[in-house]
Amino acid sequence: MKQDSRLFKQIKLKFEKLFQRKKKDDGVSISKGGSFAEPKGDFGKAEDLANVWSLDSSDSNVSEYQVKRWPKVVIAANVFLVIMLFVFLVLPKILPGFFKNTDIALFVEEDPVYIYDDTYRVVKAYCSSVMEKDDVTSHRITQVLMNEPVHYLTDDCKNGYVLIRTMDNFVGYVKAEDLSEDMSSCEPDLHLYKLVIADGSKRVMSHASNGTLIAEVMMNTVLYADVKRDGVYQVCLPNGETGWISSNGVVELGLYEETERVGVRYFVSSILTMVNSTYLEGGVTKRGISMEGLAFVSAAVNGINIPRDMEGQMESGEPVTLQYDAVTGELLLDSIIPGDLVFLSDPYHPESKRVYEVAVCTDTGVLLMRAPAGTSVKLRTFTAGSDIVKRIIAVRRVFS
Image 1 (cartoon, helix red, strand yellow):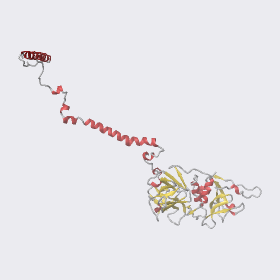
Image 2 (cartoon, helix red, strand yellow):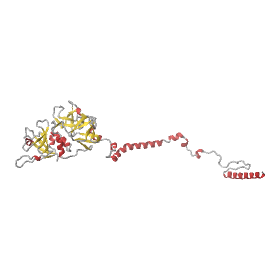
Image 3 (spheres, helix red, strand yellow):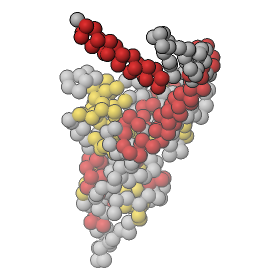
Image 4 (cartoon, one colour):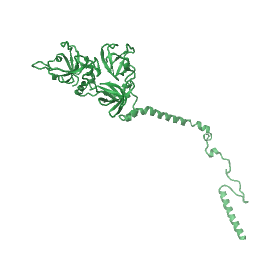
């Protein structure tokens, strides 16, 4: 037992020495009685939290922190504004260049350019007669076709007529009810396709198949379309409606393109579509047509622009020098070729040099001209010694 007690005291003494050495190193001493001495240095001194934890006023005051946060909101607002300006001002100017001539271009094109202002009107009837006076019995100057724009010259409406000027500068009176103020049907930039009717007429239907008739449009009518399917177009009409026409007998062009010039045989083919049509002074459609009107629309759909009146047509193309037989002195018929315009004097006064009518040569020795009765246009043959030859004043070749 004594031995164990001595061993215990030795162990205790060693631990006390170790403990005293450790506390000495930490700045704390222990008295001989085993109690702790007063700590040395700043041990136990109250700490300044602001210095110890680096807390400034902005970290210790929530309301002040929120006040000083506003510059970040301003920066975010400025960034948002810059993004919006880029999206709505910059992108619309640069995107069309990337997607030009692609299907995506439809969605990024710039605002449309409008050609016609409130001084224009558009024809909404299949055609409208341009009269010399505001009277149905006056002289008919010409006719304007559906969807054809005209200059509107006056708001005064007399006898249901208003004064207009055609795009080729013929002034006259048309029925006010035949015109529309809405020019959207003939504004190229609002549409995708420009169409020219090359047949004598085309039916516009309510549906692409098995539809009902909406309108009939005539040769040289220009329409615009927004939808193209196999064999059909959906066209916009000046009365606000849309309809469908077949692609047969229709020339598709770029929105600002003019009809391409073709050979004379196509011109003659267009002329022949009107054989036996009703003759109408100044008329330009198969429902009633004059020979100068027929020459005008047939040339237009085949790429040649000539005036719509006989006086203007007398100056069109190139003059043709007629050839005569050296022995008999008779006209050589093949000096007048298909497509030539032949100007004739009055049949009752063949010696007169005043132009009475125009005819179109469709074949050697054959003219399409007004019938003697004056009710229709007919094909007539002529020989070197016929009365028709004696009436010839001039011949013009509009197709080389």
